[in-house]
Length: 378
Image (cartoon, rainbow, N blue to C red; front, top):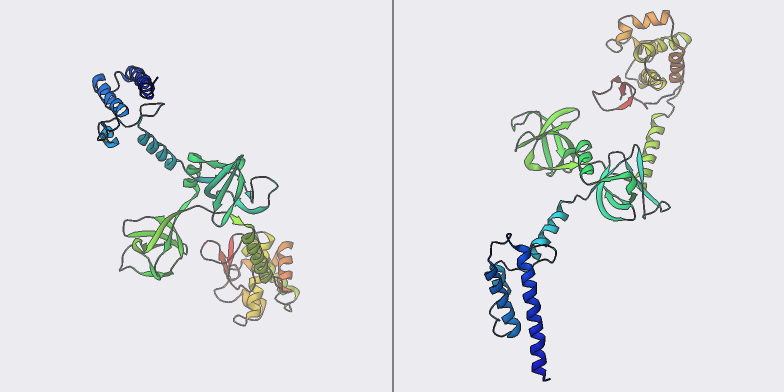
């Protein structure tokens, strides 16, 4: 058989196959495609013509078929390949890369995806991050400066993670100019609390309007211009081992400074009892730490030089301790002073302190300082 005849038989077989596939396709899409069977066959004949004589159909470019609705079809369903790819890309975009810790306290983050790997940091309760990779029941994530692997057993993903983030996260503003006025009202004519520096962050109370954002500033409601800040949703991040060690070191140094003995002051039994009575009146319902802090406040004043140099002088100074001025301290002094308050008085007189050199205190929540129980000291 000549070469040309063999080629003819091969092409004939191919054409018959195409015709059979066409019949099946027409049956499958009957009632679903608005094009008539004749139009569909005509388009196929055009394709067959190209196979038999490539030169004859050269002018029928791919775009001509696509313009008529004959883009290549997916083998599984009647969706053009380009549309299917777009659909898959859209689904990938919709899938969240957020991950949240699902623990009561803390979750170890490791250098690799197994329990024996080196610990590189910690995710605390309500902390979240972004998924970098997943394998074998572990997730590699980034949370702030922390990058590492955590067990999927203690993580939540997808819609659950989004819901938790919305519940525990908060909006913050970051200052994007050299200095920005924090105003008392949403107006350029309003009074000013202070100037916020570039990169300062503040919690958002409310996005007031397109021009002003209400923020928390030193326990007050302030307003900053929306034009000069970056508004972002904030979720607490984990800590690296290095940052944990640095924080613990700083806390230990601060505690050592706060508890450094201030030196004993000469005092008799009456002064000790008087100080114990004041401690009971101011902090009788507090822990021993809170009672010692009140005693240390009085003794820091005795040592400071800015106040009277005696315990009774400090306690009865005008306008300082209401229980002393209204007679309550005297009544407790004459009656029963609890032993814990007397012990706190003795330790404070001997130089013990847990508030450093602080000389003031008041109920917590009204200013910054060292918070012990219900009081803040400064």
